[in-house]
Each structure stands twice: as C-alpha cells, then as structure tokens.
Image (cartoon, rainbow, N blue to C red; front, top):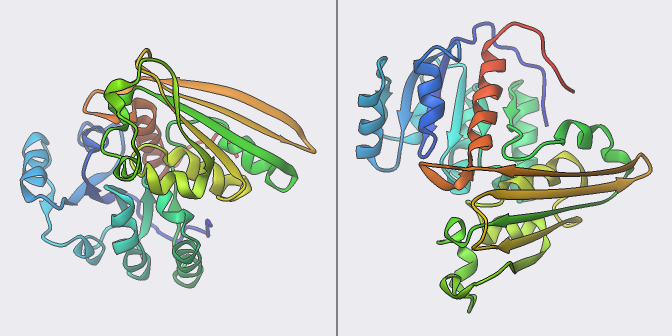
Length: 279
C-alpha cells in the first residue's frame, strides 16, 4: 500500500496521541530529528498533561481532523481503530503522510481499499510499524509463495482486560489458573474482538496472507509476565518459525515495549536521510 514519498521537508510531525508518551518524548529529546507541532486526544486533560511534560510544547487542537490542516509532513495515529476509521482518509486527502499504530482497522477491506486508492490519488504514504513482532520483511518477500501463516499470542490475563471479546464471553479472567485458549480463528475476527491487544495479527495479514487465511490463537496465562508471539509461516520458499518475547510497556500493559520502539524507529527513519537496512 506504499506509494512514492513526495515530501521535501521531514522536520515536522503532528501526533494523534493517546497512549504513546515515549514517542513524543523521543522527538522532544532529539532522538527523532523532527518537531512535534500539534497533538490531539479525545480527553483534553490528557493532551495538556503530555504537552506540559515536554520541553518543546506542541499546540493542542480541539478536533482530530484539524491535525492535517496545519503545514505538517506526517500525522501519527496512536489512539484506536476507531480513530483510523474516523480521520485516516481526510489526512491523506489533505496530502499528509500517515503512520498507523492501530493496524487492525485496515482488516476492514472497505477501509483499506479506500485508503490505498487515496494514497495513489494524492501521492501520499501510509506507514505501518512492525510493532511487537519480527519477520515482516521476510514475510513480505515471500507473500506470493505462502501456503499458511499462524500466530499464537500469549499474555497475562490483566493485559487482556476490557477487550470486546468479554462482552459476550463467559470467561472469567480472575478464575484462570493456567494457560487458557481464549480465541482460535481468523485474524479478521481477532482484531475486532481484541482491538487493543492483537494488532500484530493485522500486520501479519497485511504483510502476506490475508485476514481470513491468517490463523490466530490468543492464550491467557497468569504465569507469564511477557507478551509472547509465536509465528509460523510455510510455503514454496520453505518455513519460518520464530518467537518474540516482549515485556509489556509499564504505562500501558496491553502494548509491548517493542511496539513503541518500533514506532520510534519508523518515524526516525522517515525523518532521516541515512542508510536504510531491510526490505
């Protein structure tokens, strides 16, 4: 879904912010050669709290659609799948690049198709960081030879609380005493039932095999303090089998620390003119 990037200057970024404090601090500290100019959160108090914590305070906007109305180069979504559905198209139409953290929203084909067409029409790019998993470069390289892709994600029950899945499930997280499979099915349904927990499944689907053919298993394990992703891909190319064990982010246990570091590196690469490693 990437098209050629046509922006001349890459020194400004607007941040559609909710959980990812570390990303904003990475800009503020100079780790990312950019300027954070505007932020938005559905709760203004949260925006004010973040702004006050930064040395170079960004402007708080009253409406998420206003982010792309300013002379910025890229808008970063770090809020929710609903935020993607609400503002992604208008950002591209305003000729701004967009980085999406809530990749699960793109498993809705009607949304993905519209955004792909918009990227082509307006010559802008949508960036999807690798998040909490590894191997996406390799998976994209062999996507035309894939025959099966699966991911098993294991998390502590506390990291799964509040997921939409539990609105219709009889599972009591407090009663789980050992590894328990909560979900076993296609990625498309997984990202809908666990929207804050399983964006990794969406990334796998988008990288290679599709949301209906990518198999997802979600396991709650009260004996782990990590977010563990075991990925297996097979096809004419051979087989890939790898496991990533992530520590949850202290500020948001639903998200792995690696997911935040991946977002920082994606934005750093966007803002830098240097050697690019990887596909």
